[in-house]
Length: 161
Image (cartoon, rainbow, N blue to C red; front, side, top):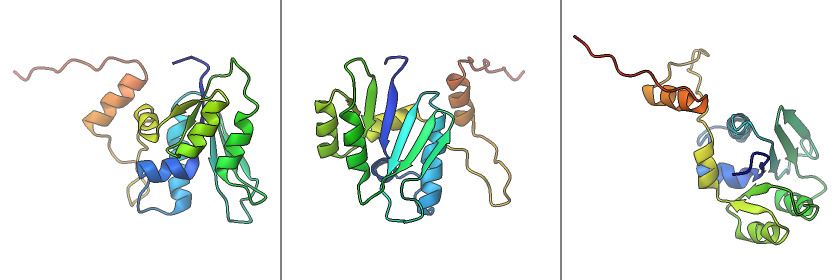
């Protein structure tokens, strides 16, 4: 994987394919995807369809994560396809989608295609908050994932004597 690879994410397609935040509101599900994408440490552009007049054309940025809501009656697929047409030969872009038509159009423009499940392998889990609003304790597996993410070898098990 190239160091300068950036991800263009078909937002709702990925949310529903991966069942991100299932049972939560749509805005909470979007927030979870955005938070998880921020853990990649790479440029990520997430595009959502929008039927909400207040969100149309809205752009948000969180560090390397940019969020766009399709506007003017266009879909997220159309916004991503239009941007893919501007790809130069050396651009390293992976379009994350399970939509075969979008994948086909973008690959013709030189983008790599990544299935949502493959993208999920790169994402760290969001840390849920308990009902009391306090952070919950991480499981041993989650601690191992974070240590791995930061390049720290987990301490060896201590023997109980």
